[in-house]
Structures are given as structure tokens and as C-alpha cells.
Amino acid sequence: MKNKLLTLFLVVTFFALGAPEASAVTNDVVKVGLRYGSSALFSANLENAVGAGYEFGYFEENRSFTSLGWTEETAVSMTAAGTIYMDGNGAYSPSVPAGGFRTIGEWHVQLDGFRSFEEASARARAEGGWPAWVDWEHVVRIGCYESQSEAEAEAGRYGGRAVRSSSTGVMVTRTRTTDVLFEFDCSGVHALGVRPSGRETSTWFKGYKYGGGFEYPRVTGGNLNVVNVIGLEDYVKGVIPYEMGGAWPLEALEAQAVCARTFVQGHNKHLSSNGFDVCNGVDCQVYNGHGSGGAGPSDTSDRAVDNTAGLCIYYNGTLVQDAVYHSSDGGATEDGANVWGTETGYLKGKADPYEAQTAVPNNHYSVTYTSGELSWILDQKGHSVGTVQDVYVSEYTPLGNVKQVTFVGTGGTKTFTGDDCRMIFYSSTYQKSVSSLRFDINGRRSGGLSVNGTGQLSSLDGASVISGGGTVSALRGNSALAITSSGTVTVSGEASQPSGGGDGNFVITGTGNGHNVGLSQYGAKAMAELGYSFQEILTFYYTDITIQ
Image (tube, rainbow, N blue to C red; front, top):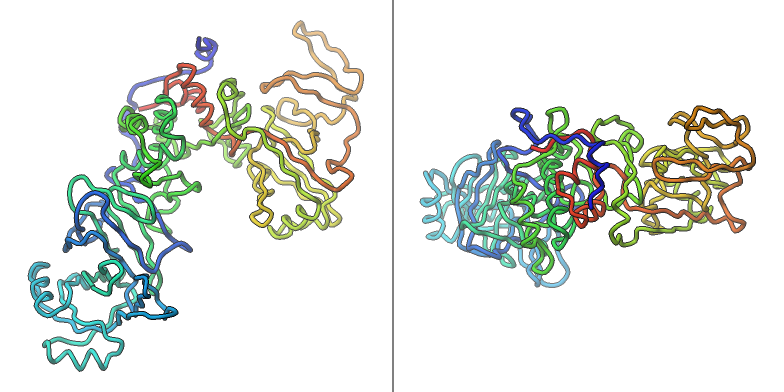
């Protein structure tokens, strides 16, 4: 039976509050960065999984597609224009590969004056060239010469002129060949767009299948970003099974669908710098499209998206900007202000009675650091305190999550707050991390007990308690039990001892996985298994929200 007390604390209102504010997503079309920045590609392949052939063109500001040409080829490669080398395995490179190779030179003969793609294509076939769209005109380019003199020597034979592929151009070839199908160059004003032909399409890229089209912004003179351009609801279908799991209870998946849909529309940190709305990894939310052929969207996860189509989370009538979630809270979520320093009305922490009622993999963790490891980690991150002699939790929140961690070293003391309390411990070199904000160090809660959220008790001297009847009594002895929103804890008046053991090791033990703010995914699973609806799940983990 559901806990009836829940209804006393949550106010759920399901009605429209007027038109929602404009979001990062345009016309219900999402741009997802698949490769960008340091992961940008010199050459990117596509292959039809469902459908035949591709259209070439570009996406307008309203994200509609302007078609400039097409091919019936089912496997195509987009490569940064310039001198391109292809090795014996058909891989493209900007530098000479080892072993045998073929070259796609950067000089060509260009024929101008074509009114349409069809007209340019016909001439290209006759001359052994390819159609191109260069500076808003249909042209034909012939030959891939390695020098200007070679191109000029051939130009007279075709009645054209010698041109060079620019640093903003993109070549499209039949994959693993030097056969050029199309060339695109709008001097960086537009990026090449590629859209698979047919109504029901699915395209392989880097081991995953994706719906929709693709965009290839090129950093001038550099590599190609790869962006999937996909409808909003199809995007959400490509998130749900990777953030939760396609076999999870329907109501949990529905709650995740509403979160994912809200998140992408309120989240645009990549738009100004990279030209897309959201990335495809854990920095945003995991998106792998139609999957890899094995794992991927299920009938249940797709149904969860369809059942909640268009629904988002609102606070005070406004689309929330941070519909954040995490894997598991270990017993209590946390105020966003205590984690990221910004007060957010709908991100309020609370004790979680549900999560423990389902199986949570790796919910309890323990990680050991040596003094030397911690000293090196702090030094590498620009926070050196010399040799670390002690590290302890210097403040807990009223919900029992970590608010401050203090390092004491031979060269000083450094205190971290909020999410930095777990992230400071991360080290790819040592392959160690702290999984959540709910942990102890060497089993000791060094900061004592938070009193009314304003301070800590590290000693019982002078402390008094008020009973339910109003009687004031002084505490006696070295410890006492206190009831908090996260359960019963012991506060001690004994002198605080260093966290490290005699061998200089610091053992951190905790529960949960993630930043502890917003929705707990395993908590949602537990609530769904207990019979709660997705609306009840969302209104438990987010405060004073509406769903519309």
C-alpha cells in the first residue's frame, strides 16, 4: 500500500498554465553533438541501416532541411577538404600513411553556370567529375590534382578554371574509395547537412544507429564536428534505455522520459560554442539513438515516451532549467544550493524511504587513498597543501550528505564544498573516485551534527535539548542520540582524531551514486515497483512542480 503521508507534503497540480517559454530546442528538433572539440573527426562515415541513399544540403536556422543534391550510394564518407590520403584499408587521413596509399588532391577544374543539381550532375557524369555546391551556386568539379599547375594544364581541355578546395569545404566520397560524390563549401556560413532518403530511416555511425539527419560543421582548417539532427520525441527515445534500461517498470521510464524531455529543452550550454543543443554523454544525458543492434530502445521504453509525449516539468509556470537526476541517492537527496551553490526552488533535498526497497547495484562503496595519492591529486588540481596529514568531513547537511571536506597538510589547509567534495577525489591516474555525496571517512563523521542548519556540534559541553513538552535539559556524557530527517545518528563529545589510520591510509565509505540532486533513478524504479505513477514519482523528487 502506498504511504498516505506522501499526499500531506506534496501538492500536485495537473493543468496548463499557459504557453511555455521558448526553449533551446527549435521547432521540436534537437541537435545532438556526437563528435566535437577534441573528438572531432577528419573523416566521418555513414551507412544506411534502413533506407537507401542520401540527400545533401544544409539545415536552416529553423532546422528545416534545404536539399541541394542526392546520391543512391548507401555508404558515404564526409571528409575535411584539402589533400586527402587513403590507406590500403580505405581509411582517410590528412597525412601520408605508412604503406600503400592513394591521394585525393586539393586542386580541381571547375565548370560554372549550372542552374540546378540535375544539370550539374549530368555534366559531371559526362566529364568524369562530381557536382558541388560552392558559395551558393551549383558547379562541377573535375579531377583531384596535387598541384595548381596540373589543374591549370587540364582546365583548358574542359573549358573551366583551376580551383582549390578551401579550408571550410567538405568532400563526400563513396566510403573506402577515392570516388567523389559531392562537395560542399559555403565559407562556413552553412554546414553540410546529410539526410538519409526515405520515410523510415536508420543510419549507422560509429557503431550505433541513429534516426534523423546529420550536420558537419567544420572548424576552419580543422576537423568535422558530427551532429545528429533529430525530432524531439525520437531523441527522447534514444535517451531512456541508456539512462535507465529498457526493461525497467513503465512508470519509472515515463518519469525518466519527462525528465529527459525537460532537460534537453532547458539546457543549451553547447549551443553558442558548438552549435548544438546537447551532447550525447554523461555531461548532458546519454544518447545512443536506435542502439547498436543488441541493446537499445525497447517496446516499453518507446511506449513510455509515447505515453508522455510533450509533457515537461514546470516550476511557477516556467519550464525548469535543470531537470537533473542521478543513479541513486543512498538514503537522501540534497538541496541544489548545497551541491552547486545556487538556490533552486524545485531542487530541495529530502529523505528517501523508497530507494532502499529495490536492488541497487554497487550502492555501497569503499575506496582507500594513501596520503601520497591525495597529496598528488590535490597538487595536480592546483590545490596543494603539501603532504596530506588528515582529511575529514568538516560539515554535513541536515540530511546527512557531505557539505564540506577539509584536507590538512604540511603546507596548509584546504576546504572544499558542495559537489567538489566528491569530485576532488577523482583521479584517472589512480582510477579512483568517490561515488556520491553521502560518505564517511574512516567511519568518522568529523564535523559533528548540524544544528538547525547553522552550525555543528563537535562537543556536547554546554549543549541542551528541549523535549516535546518544552522541558530544557543539559546533555551528559560523551555521546547522545539525535533524530534527523535521515534517521538516528550519534553525536559525540569526544576529542576529534585524525581520519587516517596508522599506515597513512584514508578509507572512504558511502552509499549512492551521483550528485544526489533531483530524481534518483533507482528511487524511481522502487516507487514504480510499489505502484506509484510517474506523476507521483516526479512530484516526490522535485518540489512544488507541475507537469504539463
